[in-house]
Length: 423
Image (cartoon, rainbow, N blue to C red; front, side, top):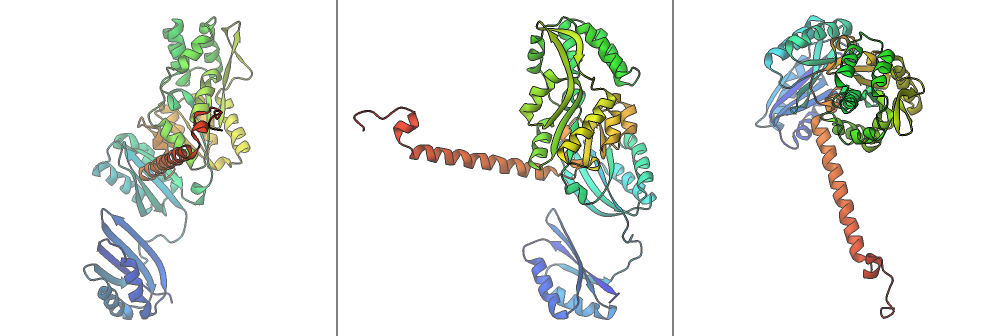
């Protein structure tokens, strides 16, 4: 049967509505072809496509309306006009501190101008940013990315376009740059402040991050200024490091989902490795400073983790974790991250220089690192539910431990041997 009918039920949501509808439709004897349902702020929108002819409309409407008093029921022949059949689907993620009607209107207009039809909209977050995910069919992805990227700054929104599909549910490798991404600020600048050469090092850092100076040369120049610094300054600096807002939430949530995490940094292993261990990050690649007699020599040990080295580390970690490159995500802010961002399945520029924003697949300008989760389709509600579940599990474990402790003999609890009198 090629013809079909669309049954639409709207109104105040409540338990058992779908059950009553399908119970009423069963005696009609028409096959169910598709079902979609959403609930928004207590309002139900339920659509059921059934095989049938226009002559069946009154019979279907009567059965459904009788079963669902108080709800609005509409039945009409299905029309395929304006619907894009099959084809590739893309996910457009939009986020900003505040998303106004004007910005959303522009995003939807660009989707339509690229031949796209929005088939589903999901709210991902309302704080600390507002984010929506649009499932789009029929759009030219290159044109869509180009148009939305060009408009993002004017609209004051961040937009990402990705192919939809099962790969989003597979294991991913998430690789983070350290300085000005996982961490606030640049570690070498913080070390320079301790060494009294902050201005000289900052000037070289700025030139390197802007792509005006080769990273290897810049690193050598900056380290030479730090020669003679006591190794203890590295340990002291670790206690002063500030993570980017949302960094702990990001790593914690990714680990719960079974994702693999890594830090690939042009910074220093002596600073990054202890932090990565504390956060539970799986892999680290960073430059190891040479130390002789407790002082920095101004050199690094082994190959420099530069622009090419970062991309190589991403490929190496992906192979070790058994994750295809298409399922890797790289996040960075500087010119030495460009090769890594290009090699990853999804390259994200995080509060990055214009050179990096223009080259990346997606750009985030909000200061919250956990906004990366929204680009993976993970909602704020899911993050918070996972946190509550984890807290409940820890509370249950503590309660069980307390009960077990109370059931043990007093001398076992205290850790002392039984006295002669008690024996």
